[in-house]
Image (cartoon, rainbow, N blue to C red; front, side, top):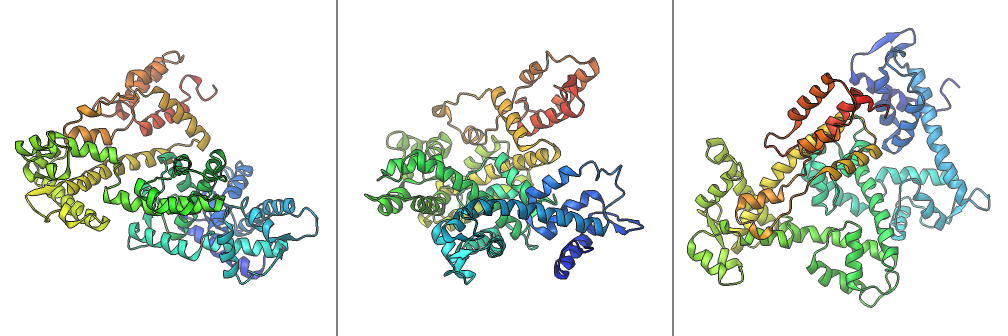
Length: 542
Protein backbone atom coordinates (compact mmCIF):
# COMPACT_ATOMS: atom_id res chain seq x y z
CA UNK A 1 0.00 0.00 0.00
CA UNK A 2 2.86 2.41 0.80
CA UNK A 3 4.28 1.70 -2.64
CA UNK A 4 0.87 2.50 -4.23
CA UNK A 5 0.86 -0.93 -5.87
CA UNK A 6 4.08 -0.37 -7.81
CA UNK A 7 6.80 -2.99 -8.07
CA UNK A 8 10.23 -2.19 -6.66
CA UNK A 9 11.61 -1.62 -10.17
CA UNK A 10 8.76 0.77 -10.99
CA UNK A 11 9.27 2.59 -7.71
CA UNK A 12 12.98 3.04 -8.47
CA UNK A 13 12.08 4.55 -11.83
CA UNK A 14 9.61 6.92 -10.13
CA UNK A 15 12.23 7.92 -7.58
CA UNK A 16 14.69 8.63 -10.38
CA UNK A 17 12.13 10.90 -12.06
CA UNK A 18 11.44 12.62 -8.72
CA UNK A 19 15.15 13.23 -8.21
CA UNK A 20 15.30 14.68 -11.71
CA UNK A 21 12.97 17.44 -10.59
CA UNK A 22 15.92 18.92 -8.69
CA UNK A 23 17.11 20.52 -11.91
CA UNK A 24 13.97 22.67 -12.05
CA UNK A 25 15.14 25.17 -9.45
CA UNK A 26 16.00 25.50 -5.75
CA UNK A 27 14.30 22.84 -3.63
CA UNK A 28 12.28 23.30 -0.45
CA UNK A 29 12.59 20.98 2.53
CA UNK A 30 9.82 20.02 4.95
CA UNK A 31 9.03 17.33 7.51
CA UNK A 32 8.20 14.92 4.68
CA UNK A 33 11.74 15.20 3.31
CA UNK A 34 12.82 16.99 0.20
CA UNK A 35 9.98 18.81 -1.60
CA UNK A 36 9.87 19.73 -5.24
CA UNK A 37 8.18 22.79 -6.63
CA UNK A 38 4.60 22.15 -7.81
CA UNK A 39 5.39 23.51 -11.28
CA UNK A 40 8.06 20.81 -11.72
CA UNK A 41 5.55 18.02 -11.09
CA UNK A 42 4.42 17.72 -14.72
CA UNK A 43 7.99 17.41 -16.03
CA UNK A 44 8.85 14.77 -13.44
CA UNK A 45 5.76 12.67 -14.13
CA UNK A 46 6.33 12.78 -17.90
CA UNK A 47 9.99 11.86 -17.39
CA UNK A 48 8.70 8.71 -15.71
CA UNK A 49 5.57 7.92 -17.73
CA UNK A 50 6.57 9.15 -21.20
CA UNK A 51 5.09 11.49 -23.79
CA UNK A 52 2.11 9.24 -24.52
CA UNK A 53 0.66 10.16 -21.11
CA UNK A 54 0.57 13.87 -22.00
CA UNK A 55 -3.21 14.26 -22.41
CA UNK A 56 -3.99 12.29 -19.24
CA UNK A 57 -1.43 14.30 -17.30
CA UNK A 58 -3.03 17.58 -18.41
CA UNK A 59 -6.42 16.31 -17.21
CA UNK A 60 -4.92 15.22 -13.87
CA UNK A 61 -3.20 18.55 -13.27
CA UNK A 62 -6.37 20.46 -14.12
CA UNK A 63 -8.27 18.41 -11.52
CA UNK A 64 -5.80 19.37 -8.74
CA UNK A 65 -4.91 22.85 -10.01
CA UNK A 66 -6.16 24.63 -6.89
CA UNK A 67 -4.21 22.35 -4.53
CA UNK A 68 -0.94 22.87 -6.40
CA UNK A 69 -1.12 26.65 -6.49
CA UNK A 70 2.21 28.04 -5.31
CA UNK A 71 0.46 30.18 -2.74
CA UNK A 72 -1.25 27.13 -1.20
CA UNK A 73 1.12 24.17 -1.61
CA UNK A 74 4.62 24.39 -0.08
CA UNK A 75 5.83 21.68 -2.46
CA UNK A 76 5.36 18.05 -3.43
CA UNK A 77 6.90 15.26 -1.37
CA UNK A 78 8.05 11.92 -2.75
CA UNK A 79 5.01 10.10 -1.31
CA UNK A 80 2.71 12.63 -2.97
CA UNK A 81 4.68 12.24 -6.20
CA UNK A 82 4.13 8.46 -6.06
CA UNK A 83 0.42 9.02 -5.43
CA UNK A 84 0.20 11.29 -8.47
CA UNK A 85 2.04 8.66 -10.53
CA UNK A 86 -0.53 6.06 -9.47
CA UNK A 87 -3.45 8.35 -10.41
CA UNK A 88 -1.86 9.07 -13.77
CA UNK A 89 -1.25 5.42 -14.58
CA UNK A 90 -4.73 4.35 -13.46
CA UNK A 91 -6.41 7.08 -15.52
CA UNK A 92 -4.40 6.11 -18.58
CA UNK A 93 -4.93 2.35 -18.18
CA UNK A 94 -8.65 2.86 -17.56
CA UNK A 95 -8.98 4.75 -20.83
CA UNK A 96 -7.10 2.00 -22.73
CA UNK A 97 -9.13 -0.73 -21.02
CA UNK A 98 -12.40 0.96 -22.01
CA UNK A 99 -11.31 0.89 -25.64
CA UNK A 100 -10.33 -2.78 -25.25
CA UNK A 101 -13.77 -3.66 -23.86
CA UNK A 102 -15.48 -2.06 -26.86
CA UNK A 103 -13.76 -4.58 -29.15
CA UNK A 104 -14.29 -7.54 -26.80
CA UNK A 105 -17.92 -7.87 -27.88
CA UNK A 106 -18.30 -11.51 -26.82
CA UNK A 107 -16.88 -10.73 -23.34
CA UNK A 108 -14.36 -13.59 -23.38
CA UNK A 109 -11.51 -11.22 -22.43
CA UNK A 110 -9.85 -11.82 -25.80
CA UNK A 111 -9.58 -9.93 -29.09
CA UNK A 112 -8.45 -11.29 -32.46
CA UNK A 113 -5.82 -9.93 -34.85
CA UNK A 114 -8.29 -7.78 -36.84
CA UNK A 115 -9.58 -6.19 -33.66
CA UNK A 116 -5.97 -5.55 -32.63
CA UNK A 117 -5.36 -3.31 -35.64
CA UNK A 118 -8.59 -1.40 -35.06
CA UNK A 119 -7.90 -1.09 -31.32
CA UNK A 120 -4.45 0.41 -31.87
CA UNK A 121 -6.01 3.41 -33.60
CA UNK A 122 -7.70 5.02 -30.54
CA UNK A 123 -4.51 4.54 -28.49
CA UNK A 124 -2.48 6.51 -31.01
CA UNK A 125 -1.37 4.10 -33.75
CA UNK A 126 -3.33 4.11 -37.01
CA UNK A 127 -1.19 1.60 -38.91
CA UNK A 128 -1.58 -0.53 -42.02
CA UNK A 129 -1.73 -4.34 -42.20
CA UNK A 130 1.80 -4.80 -43.54
CA UNK A 131 3.18 -2.47 -40.86
CA UNK A 132 1.34 -4.41 -38.16
CA UNK A 133 2.70 -7.70 -39.51
CA UNK A 134 6.29 -6.42 -39.30
CA UNK A 135 5.81 -5.07 -35.77
CA UNK A 136 4.25 -8.36 -34.62
CA UNK A 137 7.16 -10.24 -36.16
CA UNK A 138 9.59 -7.99 -34.29
CA UNK A 139 7.91 -8.99 -31.00
CA UNK A 140 7.97 -12.71 -31.97
CA UNK A 141 4.17 -12.93 -31.82
CA UNK A 142 3.39 -12.99 -35.54
CA UNK A 143 1.51 -16.29 -35.19
CA UNK A 144 -0.55 -15.23 -32.18
CA UNK A 145 -4.25 -15.05 -33.11
CA UNK A 146 -5.82 -13.75 -29.89
CA UNK A 147 -4.75 -11.23 -27.25
CA UNK A 148 -5.82 -10.73 -23.67
CA UNK A 149 -5.59 -7.26 -22.16
CA UNK A 150 -2.15 -7.89 -20.60
CA UNK A 151 -0.76 -9.09 -23.96
CA UNK A 152 -2.37 -6.14 -25.72
CA UNK A 153 -0.93 -3.65 -23.22
CA UNK A 154 2.52 -5.21 -23.58
CA UNK A 155 2.28 -4.78 -27.36
CA UNK A 156 1.17 -1.15 -26.95
CA UNK A 157 4.27 -0.47 -24.84
CA UNK A 158 6.42 -2.08 -27.55
CA UNK A 159 4.70 0.13 -30.13
CA UNK A 160 5.51 3.19 -28.06
CA UNK A 161 9.17 2.22 -27.88
CA UNK A 162 9.37 2.45 -31.68
CA UNK A 163 6.59 5.07 -31.95
CA UNK A 164 4.70 2.73 -34.28
CA UNK A 165 7.31 3.00 -37.05
CA UNK A 166 8.91 0.13 -38.91
CA UNK A 167 12.69 -0.33 -38.75
CA UNK A 168 13.21 1.39 -42.14
CA UNK A 169 10.96 4.31 -41.20
CA UNK A 170 12.91 4.80 -37.98
CA UNK A 171 16.24 4.77 -39.84
CA UNK A 172 15.00 7.35 -42.36
CA UNK A 173 13.58 9.64 -39.66
CA UNK A 174 16.69 9.41 -37.50
CA UNK A 175 18.90 10.17 -40.52
CA UNK A 176 16.80 13.24 -41.31
CA UNK A 177 16.90 14.39 -37.67
CA UNK A 178 20.69 14.04 -37.59
CA UNK A 179 20.95 16.49 -40.51
CA UNK A 180 19.40 19.21 -38.36
CA UNK A 181 20.50 18.48 -34.78
CA UNK A 182 23.64 19.86 -33.16
CA UNK A 183 26.52 17.99 -31.51
CA UNK A 184 24.49 17.54 -28.31
CA UNK A 185 21.85 15.55 -30.20
CA UNK A 186 19.25 18.29 -29.73
CA UNK A 187 17.42 20.29 -32.41
CA UNK A 188 15.98 23.78 -32.03
CA UNK A 189 12.18 23.78 -32.20
CA UNK A 190 12.26 26.57 -34.78
CA UNK A 191 13.90 24.11 -37.20
CA UNK A 192 10.92 21.74 -37.11
CA UNK A 193 9.19 23.49 -40.03
CA UNK A 194 12.32 23.22 -42.18
CA UNK A 195 12.81 19.55 -41.27
CA UNK A 196 9.18 18.70 -42.04
CA UNK A 197 9.53 20.41 -45.42
CA UNK A 198 12.72 18.44 -46.03
CA UNK A 199 10.73 15.25 -45.40
CA UNK A 200 7.96 16.40 -47.75
CA UNK A 201 5.34 17.44 -45.17
CA UNK A 202 3.31 20.64 -45.35
CA UNK A 203 2.10 22.26 -42.12
CA UNK A 204 1.08 25.72 -41.03
CA UNK A 205 3.07 27.42 -38.22
CA UNK A 206 0.09 27.06 -35.86
CA UNK A 207 -0.15 23.31 -36.54
CA UNK A 208 3.58 22.89 -35.95
CA UNK A 209 3.42 24.89 -32.73
CA UNK A 210 0.57 22.67 -31.47
CA UNK A 211 2.56 19.49 -32.17
CA UNK A 212 5.74 20.91 -30.64
CA UNK A 213 3.81 21.83 -27.50
CA UNK A 214 2.81 18.19 -27.04
CA UNK A 215 6.39 16.90 -27.19
CA UNK A 216 8.51 19.72 -25.74
CA UNK A 217 6.84 19.40 -22.35
CA UNK A 218 9.78 20.92 -20.44
CA UNK A 219 9.64 24.04 -22.61
CA UNK A 220 13.40 24.22 -23.21
CA UNK A 221 12.96 25.13 -26.89
CA UNK A 222 14.73 22.01 -28.18
CA UNK A 223 13.88 18.37 -28.82
CA UNK A 224 15.85 15.15 -28.77
CA UNK A 225 15.35 12.16 -31.06
CA UNK A 226 12.65 10.63 -28.82
CA UNK A 227 10.61 13.83 -28.82
CA UNK A 228 11.09 14.15 -32.58
CA UNK A 229 9.85 10.60 -33.23
CA UNK A 230 6.82 11.29 -31.03
CA UNK A 231 6.16 14.46 -33.06
CA UNK A 232 6.39 12.44 -36.26
CA UNK A 233 3.89 9.95 -34.84
CA UNK A 234 1.49 12.84 -34.23
CA UNK A 235 2.13 14.01 -37.79
CA UNK A 236 1.45 10.51 -39.15
CA UNK A 237 -1.83 10.22 -37.21
CA UNK A 238 -2.94 13.59 -38.60
CA UNK A 239 -2.01 12.45 -42.13
CA UNK A 240 -3.98 9.20 -41.76
CA UNK A 241 -7.12 11.18 -40.91
CA UNK A 242 -6.61 13.33 -44.02
CA UNK A 243 -5.93 10.23 -46.16
CA UNK A 244 -9.16 8.53 -45.10
CA UNK A 245 -11.27 11.61 -45.78
CA UNK A 246 -9.72 12.15 -49.23
CA UNK A 247 -9.89 8.45 -50.15
CA UNK A 248 -13.61 8.22 -49.37
CA UNK A 249 -14.57 11.60 -50.84
CA UNK A 250 -12.95 10.88 -54.22
CA UNK A 251 -14.09 7.23 -54.29
CA UNK A 252 -10.64 5.90 -54.96
CA UNK A 253 -11.81 2.37 -54.15
CA UNK A 254 -13.20 2.29 -57.67
CA UNK A 255 -10.74 2.37 -60.59
CA UNK A 256 -9.47 5.96 -60.20
CA UNK A 257 -7.97 8.31 -62.77
CA UNK A 258 -4.59 9.96 -62.28
CA UNK A 259 -6.38 13.28 -61.93
CA UNK A 260 -8.60 11.94 -59.12
CA UNK A 261 -5.55 10.59 -57.29
CA UNK A 262 -3.75 13.93 -57.69
CA UNK A 263 -6.79 15.82 -56.36
CA UNK A 264 -7.04 13.47 -53.37
CA UNK A 265 -3.33 13.91 -52.62
CA UNK A 266 -3.69 17.69 -52.79
CA UNK A 267 -6.66 17.49 -50.41
CA UNK A 268 -4.41 15.46 -48.07
CA UNK A 269 -1.73 18.20 -48.11
CA UNK A 270 0.70 15.97 -50.01
CA UNK A 271 2.97 17.83 -52.39
CA UNK A 272 3.01 16.29 -55.87
CA UNK A 273 5.32 16.60 -58.84
CA UNK A 274 4.07 16.01 -62.38
CA UNK A 275 7.06 13.85 -63.35
CA UNK A 276 6.67 11.73 -60.22
CA UNK A 277 2.93 11.36 -60.79
CA UNK A 278 3.33 10.25 -64.41
CA UNK A 279 6.46 8.10 -64.11
CA UNK A 280 6.14 6.60 -60.62
CA UNK A 281 2.54 6.81 -59.41
CA UNK A 282 0.44 6.05 -62.50
CA UNK A 283 2.19 2.72 -63.30
CA UNK A 284 1.38 1.61 -59.73
CA UNK A 285 -2.40 2.02 -60.11
CA UNK A 286 -3.28 2.24 -63.81
CA UNK A 287 -6.47 0.25 -64.54
CA UNK A 288 -6.43 -1.19 -61.01
CA UNK A 289 -8.71 -0.95 -58.02
CA UNK A 290 -7.04 1.05 -55.27
CA UNK A 291 -7.53 0.03 -51.65
CA UNK A 292 -6.80 2.41 -48.78
CA UNK A 293 -3.39 0.90 -48.06
CA UNK A 294 -2.46 1.42 -51.70
CA UNK A 295 -3.46 5.07 -51.53
CA UNK A 296 -1.36 5.58 -48.40
CA UNK A 297 1.63 3.98 -50.15
CA UNK A 298 1.12 6.34 -53.10
CA UNK A 299 0.99 9.33 -50.75
CA UNK A 300 4.18 8.19 -49.01
CA UNK A 301 5.90 7.66 -52.38
CA UNK A 302 4.99 11.22 -53.43
CA UNK A 303 6.15 12.59 -50.10
CA UNK A 304 9.52 10.86 -50.46
CA UNK A 305 10.14 11.53 -54.18
CA UNK A 306 8.59 14.94 -54.74
CA UNK A 307 10.96 16.71 -52.30
CA UNK A 308 13.93 15.45 -54.33
CA UNK A 309 12.63 17.15 -57.46
CA UNK A 310 11.65 20.23 -55.48
CA UNK A 311 15.08 20.43 -53.86
CA UNK A 312 16.63 20.82 -57.32
CA UNK A 313 14.39 23.87 -57.71
CA UNK A 314 15.15 24.99 -54.14
CA UNK A 315 11.52 24.08 -53.30
CA UNK A 316 10.11 26.69 -55.69
CA UNK A 317 7.01 25.76 -57.66
CA UNK A 318 7.26 25.94 -61.47
CA UNK A 319 5.30 29.20 -61.64
CA UNK A 320 7.55 30.71 -58.96
CA UNK A 321 10.60 29.60 -60.91
CA UNK A 322 9.14 31.32 -63.96
CA UNK A 323 8.94 34.60 -62.01
CA UNK A 324 12.62 34.33 -61.15
CA UNK A 325 13.54 33.44 -64.70
CA UNK A 326 11.72 36.18 -66.60
CA UNK A 327 12.63 39.34 -64.67
CA UNK A 328 14.83 42.04 -66.22
CA UNK A 329 17.25 41.62 -63.32
CA UNK A 330 18.28 38.14 -64.49
CA UNK A 331 20.23 39.27 -67.56
CA UNK A 332 23.79 40.48 -67.56
CA UNK A 333 23.57 42.77 -70.59
CA UNK A 334 21.20 44.27 -73.18
CA UNK A 335 22.00 41.55 -75.69
CA UNK A 336 20.77 38.83 -73.36
CA UNK A 337 17.60 40.80 -72.58
CA UNK A 338 16.86 41.22 -76.28
CA UNK A 339 17.41 37.50 -76.95
CA UNK A 340 15.04 36.52 -74.16
CA UNK A 341 12.32 38.86 -75.35
CA UNK A 342 12.56 37.44 -78.85
CA UNK A 343 12.54 33.78 -77.81
CA UNK A 344 10.79 31.61 -75.21
CA UNK A 345 12.65 32.66 -72.10
CA UNK A 346 14.94 29.66 -72.46
CA UNK A 347 17.69 28.94 -69.93
CA UNK A 348 20.39 29.72 -72.50
CA UNK A 349 18.90 33.15 -73.00
CA UNK A 350 19.15 34.08 -69.31
CA UNK A 351 22.00 31.86 -68.32
CA UNK A 352 23.81 34.14 -65.92
CA UNK A 353 23.98 37.52 -64.20
CA UNK A 354 27.16 39.39 -63.40
CA UNK A 355 28.23 39.53 -59.76
CA UNK A 356 27.98 43.32 -59.76
CA UNK A 357 24.41 43.31 -61.10
CA UNK A 358 23.41 40.63 -58.60
CA UNK A 359 24.77 42.61 -55.64
CA UNK A 360 23.01 45.72 -56.95
CA UNK A 361 19.68 43.88 -57.03
CA UNK A 362 20.22 42.38 -53.56
CA UNK A 363 20.85 45.85 -52.15
CA UNK A 364 17.28 46.79 -53.14
CA UNK A 365 16.07 43.85 -51.00
CA UNK A 366 17.47 45.52 -47.90
CA UNK A 367 20.50 43.22 -47.74
CA UNK A 368 23.55 45.24 -46.54
CA UNK A 369 25.86 44.21 -49.38
CA UNK A 370 27.70 47.56 -49.18
CA UNK A 371 29.14 46.84 -45.73
CA UNK A 372 32.17 44.54 -45.26
CA UNK A 373 30.23 42.13 -43.04
CA UNK A 374 27.20 42.19 -45.31
CA UNK A 375 29.30 41.57 -48.43
CA UNK A 376 31.14 38.70 -46.73
CA UNK A 377 27.85 37.16 -45.59
CA UNK A 378 26.24 37.25 -49.04
CA UNK A 379 29.36 35.80 -50.69
CA UNK A 380 29.32 32.96 -48.16
CA UNK A 381 25.64 32.40 -48.94
CA UNK A 382 26.47 32.34 -52.65
CA UNK A 383 29.00 29.56 -52.07
CA UNK A 384 26.46 27.73 -49.91
CA UNK A 385 23.81 28.12 -52.64
CA UNK A 386 26.18 26.65 -55.24
CA UNK A 387 26.94 23.67 -52.99
CA UNK A 388 23.27 23.23 -52.03
CA UNK A 389 22.22 23.11 -55.70
CA UNK A 390 24.99 20.61 -56.44
CA UNK A 391 23.91 18.32 -53.58
CA UNK A 392 20.28 18.59 -54.73
CA UNK A 393 21.28 17.12 -58.09
CA UNK A 394 21.51 20.19 -60.33
CA UNK A 395 23.90 19.50 -63.22
CA UNK A 396 27.34 21.14 -63.13
CA UNK A 397 26.63 22.72 -66.52
CA UNK A 398 23.73 24.67 -64.96
CA UNK A 399 25.82 25.89 -62.01
CA UNK A 400 29.09 27.08 -63.51
CA UNK A 401 32.26 27.51 -61.49
CA UNK A 402 32.23 28.55 -57.82
CA UNK A 403 33.38 32.15 -57.17
CA UNK A 404 32.93 33.02 -60.84
CA UNK A 405 32.13 36.69 -61.72
CA UNK A 406 29.19 35.28 -63.66
CA UNK A 407 26.51 33.66 -61.49
CA UNK A 408 24.36 31.05 -63.23
CA UNK A 409 20.58 31.07 -62.92
CA UNK A 410 20.18 27.93 -60.79
CA UNK A 411 22.76 29.20 -58.32
CA UNK A 412 20.76 32.42 -58.00
CA UNK A 413 17.60 30.35 -57.43
CA UNK A 414 19.22 28.57 -54.48
CA UNK A 415 20.62 31.88 -53.20
CA UNK A 416 17.12 33.39 -53.18
CA UNK A 417 15.93 30.39 -51.17
CA UNK A 418 18.66 31.02 -48.57
CA UNK A 419 17.65 34.68 -48.34
CA UNK A 420 13.99 33.69 -47.90
CA UNK A 421 15.01 31.09 -45.31
CA UNK A 422 16.60 33.83 -43.17
CA UNK A 423 13.36 35.83 -43.34
CA UNK A 424 11.35 32.71 -42.51
CA UNK A 425 13.56 31.81 -39.54
CA UNK A 426 13.20 35.31 -38.11
CA UNK A 427 9.40 35.21 -38.42
CA UNK A 428 9.16 31.63 -37.10
CA UNK A 429 11.23 32.60 -34.06
CA UNK A 430 9.00 35.62 -33.47
CA UNK A 431 5.84 33.51 -33.76
CA UNK A 432 7.23 30.74 -31.56
CA UNK A 433 8.09 33.31 -28.87
CA UNK A 434 4.62 34.86 -29.07
CA UNK A 435 2.83 31.48 -28.89
CA UNK A 436 4.87 30.49 -25.83
CA UNK A 437 4.21 33.82 -24.14
CA UNK A 438 0.44 33.58 -24.56
CA UNK A 439 -1.90 31.25 -22.69
CA UNK A 440 -4.59 30.53 -25.25
CA UNK A 441 -5.85 27.03 -25.97
CA UNK A 442 -5.57 25.56 -29.45
CA UNK A 443 -9.26 26.28 -30.13
CA UNK A 444 -8.85 29.87 -28.95
CA UNK A 445 -5.79 30.28 -31.20
CA UNK A 446 -7.85 29.06 -34.16
CA UNK A 447 -10.53 31.66 -33.39
CA UNK A 448 -7.96 34.44 -33.02
CA UNK A 449 -6.38 33.36 -36.31
CA UNK A 450 -9.80 33.53 -38.00
CA UNK A 451 -10.28 37.06 -36.63
CA UNK A 452 -6.82 38.07 -37.83
CA UNK A 453 -7.41 36.66 -41.32
CA UNK A 454 -10.75 38.45 -41.58
CA UNK A 455 -9.02 41.79 -40.88
CA UNK A 456 -6.12 41.37 -43.33
CA UNK A 457 -6.32 43.27 -46.62
CA UNK A 458 -4.38 41.03 -49.00
CA UNK A 459 -2.82 43.06 -51.83
CA UNK A 460 -3.68 42.22 -55.44
CA UNK A 461 -0.38 41.19 -57.04
CA UNK A 462 0.22 41.74 -60.74
CA UNK A 463 2.87 39.10 -61.36
CA UNK A 464 3.56 40.50 -64.81
CA UNK A 465 4.74 43.72 -63.13
CA UNK A 466 7.28 41.87 -60.94
CA UNK A 467 10.41 42.74 -62.91
CA UNK A 468 13.12 43.24 -60.28
CA UNK A 469 14.66 40.71 -57.92
CA UNK A 470 13.63 42.86 -54.95
CA UNK A 471 9.98 42.77 -56.08
CA UNK A 472 10.07 39.01 -56.55
CA UNK A 473 11.65 38.39 -53.13
CA UNK A 474 9.14 40.72 -51.45
CA UNK A 475 6.35 38.78 -53.17
CA UNK A 476 7.76 35.42 -52.01
CA UNK A 477 8.35 36.64 -48.44
CA UNK A 478 4.94 38.27 -48.04
CA UNK A 479 3.60 38.14 -44.48
CA UNK A 480 -0.03 39.18 -43.83
CA UNK A 481 -0.51 42.24 -41.62
CA UNK A 482 -3.50 43.97 -40.06
CA UNK A 483 -3.28 47.70 -40.60
CA UNK A 484 -3.04 49.77 -37.42
CA UNK A 485 -6.14 51.85 -38.21
CA UNK A 486 -8.12 48.63 -38.84
CA UNK A 487 -7.03 47.21 -35.48
CA UNK A 488 -7.79 50.44 -33.63
CA UNK A 489 -11.19 50.65 -35.32
CA UNK A 490 -12.01 47.22 -33.87
CA UNK A 491 -11.72 48.68 -30.37
CA UNK A 492 -13.61 51.96 -30.94
CA UNK A 493 -16.90 50.69 -29.52
CA UNK A 494 -15.24 49.21 -26.43
CA UNK A 495 -16.10 51.26 -23.33
CA UNK A 496 -12.96 51.90 -21.31
CA UNK A 497 -11.00 54.73 -19.73
CA UNK A 498 -8.54 57.15 -21.34
CA UNK A 499 -5.54 55.50 -19.67
CA UNK A 500 -6.29 52.11 -21.21
CA UNK A 501 -6.95 53.65 -24.63
CA UNK A 502 -3.63 55.48 -24.51
CA UNK A 503 -1.80 52.33 -23.43
CA UNK A 504 -3.51 50.39 -26.23
CA UNK A 505 -2.29 52.92 -28.80
CA UNK A 506 1.24 52.94 -27.41
CA UNK A 507 1.51 49.14 -27.33
CA UNK A 508 0.08 48.80 -30.82
CA UNK A 509 2.63 51.25 -32.22
CA UNK A 510 5.44 49.52 -30.34
CA UNK A 511 4.54 46.08 -31.75
CA UNK A 512 3.72 47.21 -35.29
CA UNK A 513 6.34 46.84 -38.00
CA UNK A 514 8.36 50.04 -38.42
CA UNK A 515 7.76 50.05 -42.19
CA UNK A 516 4.08 50.87 -41.63
CA UNK A 517 2.61 47.50 -42.66
CA UNK A 518 0.88 47.07 -39.29
CA UNK A 519 0.59 44.04 -37.00
CA UNK A 520 1.64 40.57 -38.12
CA UNK A 521 0.03 37.56 -36.44
CA UNK A 522 2.53 37.23 -33.53
CA UNK A 523 2.11 40.94 -32.70
CA UNK A 524 -1.67 40.68 -33.09
CA UNK A 525 -1.66 37.71 -30.73
CA UNK A 526 0.37 39.64 -28.15
CA UNK A 527 -2.09 42.53 -28.32
CA UNK A 528 -5.07 40.21 -27.75
CA UNK A 529 -3.26 38.63 -24.78
CA UNK A 530 -2.56 42.07 -23.32
CA UNK A 531 -6.23 43.03 -23.70
CA UNK A 532 -7.25 39.85 -21.84
CA UNK A 533 -4.63 40.30 -19.10
CA UNK A 534 -5.65 43.93 -18.44
CA UNK A 535 -9.37 43.13 -18.89
CA UNK A 536 -9.49 45.90 -21.50
CA UNK A 537 -13.04 47.23 -21.58
CA UNK A 538 -14.21 44.15 -19.65
CA UNK A 539 -13.09 41.82 -22.46
CA UNK A 540 -12.28 38.98 -20.03
CA UNK A 541 -15.88 38.84 -18.88
CA UNK A 542 -17.28 39.34 -22.37
